Length: 254
Ligand code: NDP
Image 1 (cartoon, helix red, strand yellow):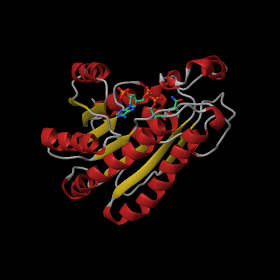
Image 2: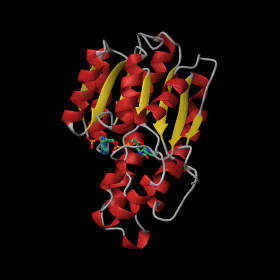
Image 3: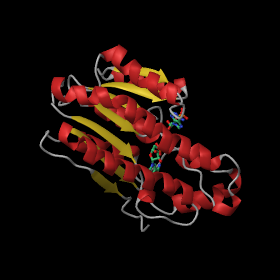
Image 4: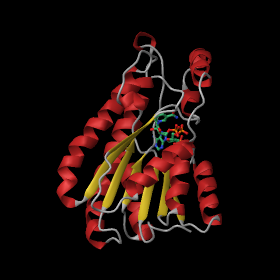
């Protein structure tokens, strides 16, 4: 096992499916003990079982991170279980596409609650522990990685509010990067293009056909392609800060 993250602890939100599951497996493979956070227990337990079967260490915590108290408890669980925290991956997210004029009540709130508020709550609660790990950790550096999107760089019709949340986490991450830079807590964003996950399936039924047509028009990225970017970002020596990685599908023009 390639174990350059041995002795570290990583918390990943949205770890039961898609990109979060791939990131969790990759960080565990690199030696981190991983704390898997999400709302549905079954997929989280499945990923934990895969990790343990490969010789890794994983702990599951069920939480809706858009609720501040639950986000706080998720971070506290990592500390009570493993005694430290070195890496946080803000991956949980929702994408509900469609024109602004037609958006049903509640869709914008669902995206803002998890993509923005969940990221803020987890990050703030984790901060004291990440700071501490820069002194006590095997790497002498800590990492906050947020999974943004190409939609955090380019706004397009149909994804106005999703883009708002992803531009938002990019801005938050850049300000936070400057605040934390003297303390060796590195802050980075990964901006995936179109990845083969269940993300788009939550779009309302009447828009499914159009969304699927666009998705199926190209060869999509795999979740592991994004996990590669995360392991590259957190795997750098402490003198290196990779703050932003944009990963498009090669077929993707937007
Ligand atoms: P998934 O739908 O598979 O993953 C989203 C994860 O977030 C799920 O595991 C879900 O688990 C979790 N989640 C959602 N809401 C909450 C919540 N309130 N509290 C805790 N966990 C929550 O899709 P992806 O893997 O594609 O998405 C992961 C990230 O990647 C997202 O931030 C997304 O915006 C981003 N992204 C994805 C792209 C793609 O093409 N797929 C492109 C660019 C960015 P549960 O429902 O059990 O809580």
